[in-house]
Amino acid sequence: MLRFEVAKRDRETKARCGFIRLKGVICETPLFMPVGTAGSVKGITPHELKECGYRLILANTYHLYLRPGHQLIRERGGLHRFMGWNRGILTDSGGFQVYSLSPLRTVTEEGVRFQSHLDGSYHMLTPEKVVEIQEALGSDILMPLDECLPYPASEAQAVNSLELTISWLKRSVEAHQGGGALFGIVQGGFFEHLRREAVSEVTSFELPGYSIGGLSVGEPVDLLHQIGAFTADLLPQDRPRYLMGVGRPQDIVEAVSYGIDMFDCVVPTRNARNGTLYTWKGKLNIKAQRFAQDEDPVDPNCTCYTCRNFSKSYLRHLYNAGELLSPRLNTIHNLHFFSELMERIRRSISEGWFSRLKKEIHESYPLT
Image (cartoon, rainbow, N blue to C red; front, top):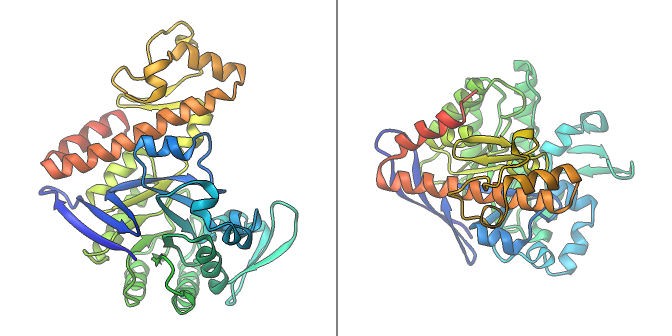
């Protein structure tokens, strides 16, 4: 189902590189997963994702349940076949989407009753239903239903939420039929004693991997990494650790230094659509007037299709003209950059220069 192997550990930090072996797919870690919310990573084809080097992507249970429906996808051979992607798929639980739709939902012990943002219809997501949906999709890695708290939240709120998340995890484990690898999610807000309790409870289920949830919800960046590092230290060494929803380059390299193996975020694709491009010297806003006559590529050392063929002047023109090619080319570049970022991180850990790479990345992308 899922096998994890640590191949090398950094001597100066807690960074490690290795492999996650799924059915027919080997994913090198640390890894970054592009977000394909509705069964499509916006602006890029599955073939182009493969060319960028990606072997695992994320899709969203909530959105696929509402449209086109998990039963329809099951009938068409599962999500891999439906979207033309023969590598790994991780599906989230929908818990974060329910959190973001707080005016439209009610949380109870049974689950979450919510109103669809599409047509206003009412639905009930239970731990059992969430597992059923993901198994119908044919996900390689599944996430159980959890409650994601906003920041700030009181200790009393965090206690109640944690109790609910653990209760839901138990039901998810019981409902899981064995299709795909079910991870556990560690919640507990921003209280270290609750995070410790959460790890103790979640790891008692002996799952193939563990996720750190409830971060990157508006808290200061130093608090994100304080709680992230504290929680990672408590998790088993022989299982992959997934920091959910965190994906800025500076946050990725920081989290790798305390032992995180997996990341996902909309940052590279969403920012591509907004005209923000990533380079090894920092972010670049292609909308800027100074690029109007710039014939150089975004990054002269980048080997992506965009940089091999087009100038900053042309990319700026496409953006300002509202051409559909603009988000396509920007997305190809950003996802290529993030793939190369992870490859350099893995190589630096393997060859013993991770601390130098971390310093270089923080110089271009300050941890603020």
